[in-house]
Image 1 (tube, rainbow, N blue to C red):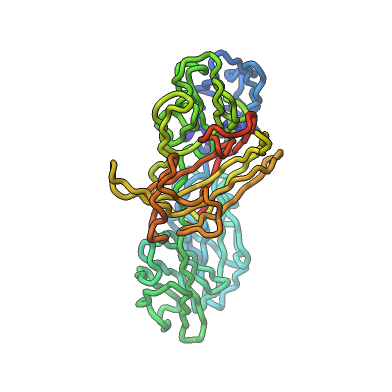
Image 2 (spheres, rainbow, N blue to C red):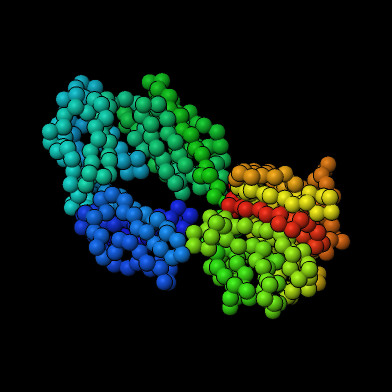
Amino acid sequence: MSNQVGDANISSSEQTANVTVHAYSDLSDLSIDSLIITEGATIFPNPDSVSDFTSDVEFTITTYQDYDWKVIVEKEMPEVEITKFEVEGERSTIIDHGNQLITVIMPVEYDLCNLNITSFEYTPEEHTLSPDYTIVHELCDTVSFFFSEMLEWKVIAQHEASMFTSFTIEDQISSTINFDQNTIDVLMPSTADLSNLRITSFHYLPENSTVTPGDEVTDFSSPVTYEFEDGTLWVVNVTQEAFEGEQVPFSNFTTWFLNGSSQNRGYYLPGNDISTPWRSGDKGAAEVIFPAFLHTVFPYPNTISPSGGTLETKSVLGKLASGSLFTGEIHGSGIDNVDTDFGVPFTSRPKRFKTTFTYEPQSYSGTMDECDIYVILQVREGSGDQEKRYRLATAWYRSDEEVKSFKELSMDLTYGELSGVPTFMLPSEESKEMPEHGFYHDDEANPTHIIVVFASSAHGASFIGGVGSKMVTQGIELEY
């Protein structure tokens, strides 16, 4: 699109395309420079005839059915740097770019509702500023100024008092001075040691005042109180940025591809290509030549706009095939001549997993089928024939409950040994499907691998289950 900034954000699940254009763009006069749709599909209206994007524009893409897509165009938020702000008679000005706030410190004898702003300079100069700063005099209350009618900065005046004007810590993410509360909030990276920090900026008013303690404080693992000589107290609170832990790629199941020469000789997996960490039992079956091959795993609700995956237990060539989706690799071909290696490299320590699913179990031999959803973290040591795999953490859901409407499932990961759980949840060296050499000796360790499994029939590896048992999952999220 003309004046576009960056790539469009296309959501197949919501059927939207979000486009950002330059801040100075005229949304009523844009053009679509490039648009790619499904081969053989048609689109209405003609993209060449649309230029007004002041409001969302809807397009209908037609293949074997109609799909309504919405194009949303927004202006980028303009970047502004305040280079100078002065008020007649001021003591000092504090410009906080992180919070878009200008605080003016005035002598006590000045009327904050009758001040004169003498300078307001910024870059880039192309921005329009409103209102006109020369006509603004009442700074006793917060005043908002807008750049290009989009980006808001606030200005307020305060009388001189015992206060910090600057307080920063080495390697900080941000530092916010709250003048109305006499507090300072400092945000540090998640890896910072709060008991061993270094203050790099320590300024206050009045400049000749004495503040106790001084800038020699290094331990901020708990709030630190500073006292000015007139008795005014300020508190510094230092916190750490929330840790954004690792996710398994393509785990939201909104991106799928067909691997193979055709649907009969291929299989669907989440991802863009075979480098994806996800596999299914369909891989082995897809390599067998027979015309009656049935997919047990496929995108939900369709391949055009997937928002999850469907796993269905089926009967193939007289063998039961559970719908299974897992992280790992599968070798060999056929229904039962395969070797499954569960798990992919992973080093984070999630606290729980969350997924949304439905399940329709079918009975077999008088028994109701069960589904499996589980996450296992392992520590692997050695390599080749000498490799040993140890269980570090477990979260396992197995149930024959029918779930007709989408249900959110959240399960905590238990680090270390398990007690009072069914045998199938415990590690076993004798397990053909997933051999493990017991629990890892240090439950504070980081994992080396993660195993994530969805199965429409929990006993599908033994060719046991109910034909027609179906699970729909909308992906999995690891929470930290």
